[in-house]
Image (tube, rainbow, N blue to C red; front, side, top):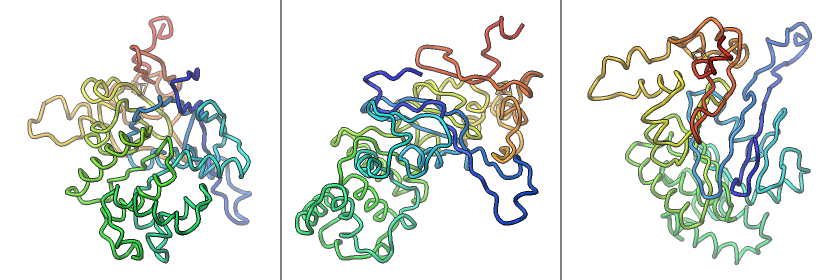
Length: 335
Ligand code: SF4
């Protein structure tokens, strides 16, 4: 994958494998019993100012990708290039500097906020770490940011448990944006909220993206939510990107059978007879023992013999759109 000047983030062949061995019994285990392949050869790019949506079922590796991208975890292999610099193997001091430019908003605002810290400390700490502000200066900036996300100065001395879910997510957003990052990874930022609050937080995120010239990786499992905020969408299945393209194309004319199954699973008031045929069979496989060949083949209604033995490559099928599926192999490859 080439890196162009317009691409703020380029991810190339990223892999994350977890070793789950514990204790003495570990030596007797086979590799397939303890190695979890959370990410397998993930590649994509995000242009400056763009929102790339990332969608897939629970456990497909979306949150792992979020944590690896902002370097809360190290990848097992592959590369992450941010603004022209390979950040895959930075030293701890360089990572600290990077974190002010690359922030994350977590799914569960309550779990991600220290319950013993006041809002002033939670939101102000990144300023003191990354911007070397004294307490007075940090307080002024914290108040300004709280007001920007819909909270008030009177909230400074309160603790996370004194807020509603939506307010807690506003605190998480303020904490992420206080250091003026360039890229924000939004890891299911509205999934834990009541439906009535979700729209408020989405609109807030979109306004902040515009005002602060942000670039987003927006992760979710709700197609409507991800489609609403995204310019392009990447679809992930069992640790691999299976389709990526403009949001409108993914939502209205999906090509990969897994993407089609996700669209078909969205409840509709005008049921179409072909929706049931497109739905995936059974449950997602395990990243501990992913199926050989195409990882989706045990669930795919259109599987062919080669699907169980040969892994399809992600390849461009139209300008800006790529699919990993043998249905799109060239006639020469199929022969
Ligand atoms: Fe289905 Fe085969 Fe395409 Fe996989 S490669 S999605 S099994 S048709």
